[in-house]
Image (cartoon, rainbow, N blue to C red; front, side):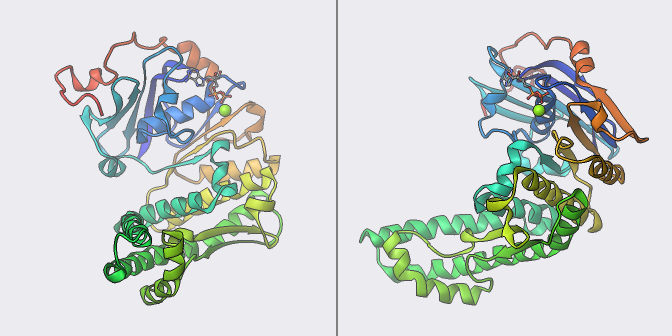
Amino acid sequence: MFVARVEADRVRSLAGVKFEPDPGLTVIIGPNGAGKTNLVESIFFGLTSRSFRTSDRRDLIPFGSSYARCRVTVSGTGVDHTFMASASRSEGNRFTMDGARIEQAEAVVHRPKVTVFSPDRLELVKGPPAGRRAHIDSFVAARWPGQAGVRASFGRILAQRNALIARISAGQADTSQLSTWNSQFAEAGSALAVSREKAVGELGERWESSAGELGLEGPKSLSYRPGAATTAEEIRTGLDEKLENDLRLGRSSWGPHHDEIRLELDGRQLRRFGSQGQQRLGLLALLFAERSALLEAGGQAPLMLLDDVMSELDAHRRDRLVERLLEGGQAIITAAEGELIPDREGICRVAITDLLAAAEGGQPEDSDPGSKEIGSADPGAAA
Ligand SMILES: Nc1ncnc2c1ncn2[C@@H]1O[C@H](COP(=O)(O)OP(=O)(O)O)[C@@H](O)[C@H]1O
Ligand SMILES: [Mg+2]
């Protein structure tokens, strides 16, 4: 599966921009501020109806406009599918495939998994552990689809146990109801911890070698640091021991919601002691490690969207990066200068200024951002 066509109808600074990436490696080149990141964000938005830069999709609405909209056509399975994502101030968000509304769970079956590198995602390496936990959990879902639900199951049970703990602390409930929740917490927590341990086990060596290849010098390690135990039995026992503390705090103070996935260089945490450049390489290596694990497991290569990735690498590393990307799968990367891109066969180069010059200036604003797909008869317009 690959992205054959992108129509950024109106997304941030882009209007009527059409783009047909290569099924292999495409480089979008252009000066700062030209709209390269916006284009990469448009692709992600069209495929997922989300943004990797912001949790508020309304940020994508062009200044002075009332909605954002992008279409992305996915080819390669015999039948093409066109996804359309829109965000509107008055009508909310909308996501369709071939004109019919679609849920995320179904969309992922018909589109490639998307991996994004962007400066905005550096938070994953240098931010708090929650981001890394969520990221590893999404790798688990991609690698072992049958375990896609473990994160959400634990999250639900944690919320319910927390609510009960808070009621007990406030004297509104007694501890007799706790044992059922503790058992469920232990089962779900163990499933989650085991999946993370397995994922990190698959990614560890790959991360270390990718990071070395990209230029992160020195001994490295990627490790799983459980916030609690990994077996259900140990977790249940632990919960009993921590009960007093939980009741004092009014929440579950112990469990896999305190897990850490630690990236280390020279025995020190990359998040705390790494330079910005080292953190960037650490993130990029993590994405490559995941890609190689998925490929080796016989899965689809994810679409790699790598925004502004070249600036930090020396010529030799840029060469290695491009070589890896040319090994297979689709990748779309951006660069401020064409000279940063190694001169190799098989790279499709696109100047963003050419795309902008060919743009049709966007469709005239219609009041319903999804109207072209759904028709005005759709009663459930507001998402
Ligand atoms: N919602 C928006 N509406 C219109 N323009 C926007 C919006 N958000 C950002 N921009 C503009 O997009 C431009 C930056 O585009 P960007 O894709 O980041 O450039 P590049 O990645 O090529 O450096 C800036 O001029 C910024 O003002
Ligand atoms: Mg940019």
